[in-house]
Image (spheres, helix red, strand yellow):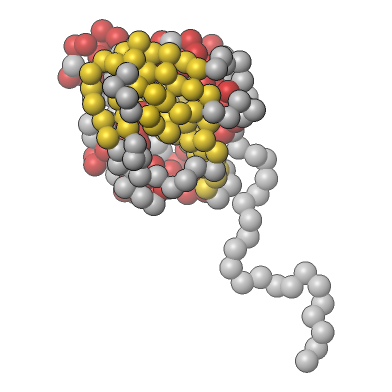
Length: 240
């Protein structure tokens, strides 16, 4: 069984009554709930827990880590970020959601600013499937329509994705690369755009389906990380 840890800074839920109404037990528990129903072994972790809930034991027991952050990216310990990065390089999957594009861990893995345009105007978003053969699109229609979402627009300062899975169109005219996959070391990374905290995006069945598919895709491959550095020859070398 795939073991999933859902990380959320859990600050909006404490400060904003609109967010509290949409996600009364927190975004992390909303996501963990539908993943548990889908058959995954889930736990949650939040910013204000000791070590942000990401202790060595938790990270070692996590196959796929889901990350949602917004207000408090800078409060995440650099030490914890490096531990998460090493776990990804060693094979742990990472799914970064919405404003997690500006998280320390996503920037560390991308090596760019990860900046973008944005506008909060409650406009329509259509998330188009542009890679219909990809496993993350399993069971989806041609597009997912959200009646209200925050706009993210290009240019999105990320490396060219290994695979572009989704592209979004917004009512105001912008487009955005909203579903991007990467390989980092032995691990897989998926960035998925929708999920503004004041809208019920993670209650939407097709959005849940994308995240469920992404967890299955990002689960570790059972193999050892390659050996690096100086090594002995596999064959006998001819003497000089």
